[in-house]
Amino acid sequence: MAKIGIIGYGSCIPRNRIKVEEIAKVWGADAESFKRGLLLEEKSVPSPDQDTITMAVEASRRAVLRAGIDPAKIGALYVGSESHPYAVKPSGTVLAEALGATPECHTADLEFACKAGTEAMYICSQLVKAGSVPYALAVGADTSQGAPGDALEYSAAAGAAAFVFGSEEDKIVAELVDTYAFMTDTPDFWRREHMHYPRHGGRFTGEPAFFKHVCGAARGMMAKTKTQPSDFRYVVFHQPNGKFPLRAGQMLGFKKEQILTGWLVNRLGNTYSGASPLGLTAVLDEAQAGDRILVVSFGSGAGSDGFVFQATGRLASVQKLAAGTREQLDNKKRYLDYGTYARYRGKIRMAEK
Amino acid sequence: MQPQKYWREIPARYRLEGGRCKKCRKAFLPSRLVCDACGSREFEKARFTGTGTVHSFTMIHTPPSGYSGPYVLAIVELDGGPKLTMQIADCGADEAKIGDKVRVEFRKLTQVGDAGVLCYGYKAVLV
Ligand SMILES: [Zn+2]
Image (tube, rainbow over all chains, first blue to last red; front, side, top):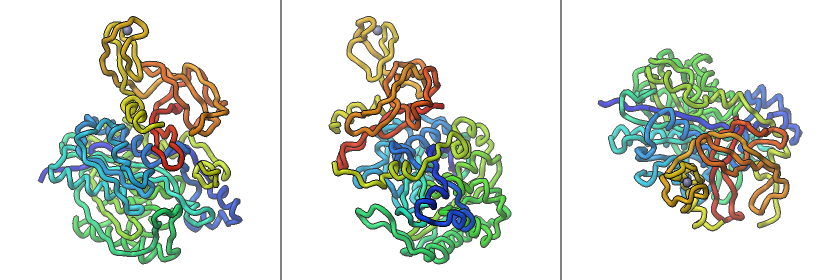
């Protein structure tokens, strides 16, 4: 069977940050308990003029640049997010127009809590594998919000990752070895129509939700590809906080050093649909030919997608073509106080317009 | 902003697609019917690069409706392209200088009230 895989990847992380201490101070909470318990230090915050669409465009431009393709040949593109700016009107049309991929292009906006980004990757990879389109673009992007004072406020962050899938062997930077999906109906986290903030089941989001699905998908993926943890140089898990992915890795028999390259959450926060995809971009920035990468996402509701990739010799030639993920995470940061953060995120009730 | 007007400006605002005078090579974004430098009416399509230099800038403290300030408004000369007026995003009054290198990013420009269309386009960020 013909090989398929990622031919270009890109990420977008906003420059603004807020520290856990700054949030805890406002609510009289203990910052140390978030730092030690959940391994969170700070998180990204979108500027008022950044949203899922703008970050999707920036990440996708980097992905198309690394792929070195004519964007008009992108036959399908999907944006996975739980914070699409419009309730009705696709994010994908704006993205396609900004890239120059219209009009011969199929698009849909996807939604599955934090898993929507890997859903897009799953669909794109299968369309390319089937030979339906020459190139397909998958994006995971979010500017998620936690209710003020809620535990989620310490982690809900913003970012986007994009991947171009293709089948020309000389273009592939990470071959897709196989995929696996694992899901059940589990009401651990949700947001009803017209509600501004999500609700969650507290501790119920752990064992029966995150760990059951992440470990189920990881074990299923390894069984399907006849691999074990030691066969992988890198593993990327969904990262709603610092602790969960490290614990999942430990339960599955992975070493910490396999996880840390794609573990961005301590200083990025949880970018929801962007989380495990952004972790993968950070791994692709570092990986060398032959390295195997396991990716397992998680979306509340609940389910996990598994992917096994293998880096190729072409990867090294595209890594420096665009801004890297850690480069964006570490540089040109702008720290916000809680008041500015609340204004940026629309948490202040304004006069009606 | 009317959706129709916004829609007409999409190629220029999303992809920096403008025109270049075939006779004197002057660049325009958006393109135009008559070249203001040589009077020619013949243009070719041009897609400009997303990098440039701050030519001049000012601080807007009393923004028009639909915009929230203060923000930096600059004239940016695109590399090999025209001079454009655009905001410098994520930038305080004391951060920008004439001659600074910038990169064009895709950002939200404005939104029409709470229920109207969202308008996207280019802004500069300091590199
Ligand atoms: Zn002319």
